[in-house]
Amino acid sequence: MKNWQTRWDETINYLKAKFPGANLGEHIESLLPVKLRQEISKELSIGKNPGKDGEDDPGVKSTKEQRHALRGLLLCQRVYYSKIWAKKTFNPGNIVADEWMLPNGWKNTSQKFWGGKAEKDILEGIGMFVIDPTATLDDLVKVAKKGKPDGIGVLPGNFTLSRADKNTRGAAETCYNGVIGWLLQSGIVSMRWVMLDTSPNGSHSCAQLFGTGKAVWDGNTPFIVGTSVLPTVKAGHILHMWIDESGAAGWNGHWVVSNGDGTICGVNNGEIKPGLEEDGVALGPEVKKAYTNNGLLMGQWLGYGGKLWKSNENGRPVRDPNVYAHANLVQFNPLKFANRI
Image (cartoon, rainbow, N blue to C red; front, side, top):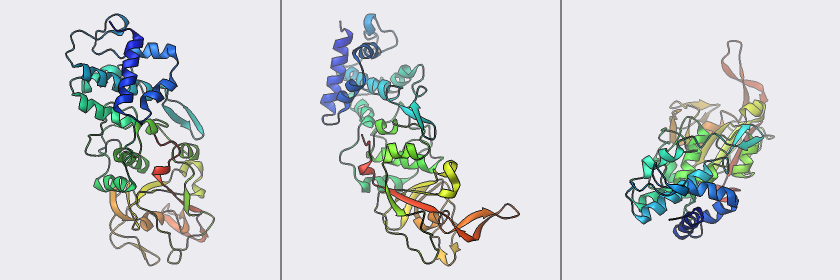
């Protein structure tokens, strides 16, 4: 009969053996004092009716390899989806432990999905908690060009994610969530990175996840439509645009992925009608709000750069002829994220 220590050691050693160099088993142990390891070890039993000290349910038929894999996955979910690791922005500048991401019954939910699967399939689930060390910026562009996230559920706390998924999973209602989904699907980031902030909001969250970034256009420099030129942004770099005039509430702005040729991939975009121009500058091909994989960066940027938008006497948006917006465009190289794990 296994005791908690034996089960714990077997599970940690399994993660170390299957994901060498990923610092997965080692990282989990570094987060947990012995007392908490003992508590969680008992939760790693397989089945609905564990025996003494969390022994496996004898009614569950599975191979040793399947049980090892399932315990490894359950351990990753138990640690990284709980307040042990998960954080959220309660309000801008205030990041707290996320106590709400690991619901009651989480284990049954996970076992219902994974319990009958082979070891190789469960390993693809565990693989969501580590990056793909071979992932490139081109891989990010490829998944972004393939399509928007499926819109089924959300990424944080998702118990069914797998590296074998062919399409990007998760919510697609905001531009930011689209980018996060593509980053995860590409393998550039892992669920450990996603769970660093389950509801990021504001510059403090951004700095924790992305680092400081590099200015493509500085807000103190007026962007003159038809005269100013945006620098080229490398393929696979993340772009964030906003105006200072929007204040903290509007700082989140718009997020897209650069294709490297002046076009972008994005969701929840500023819509562009065919043939639309502004001061003689073409805003590019049609861009639908839901998703684009070939919209011009300029078309999205001119929703921020140029003369400041305001409401006229009828409440319609118009440009202020006398005031330039303090419009900012910052790029991030996701391979250099501050906490990419």
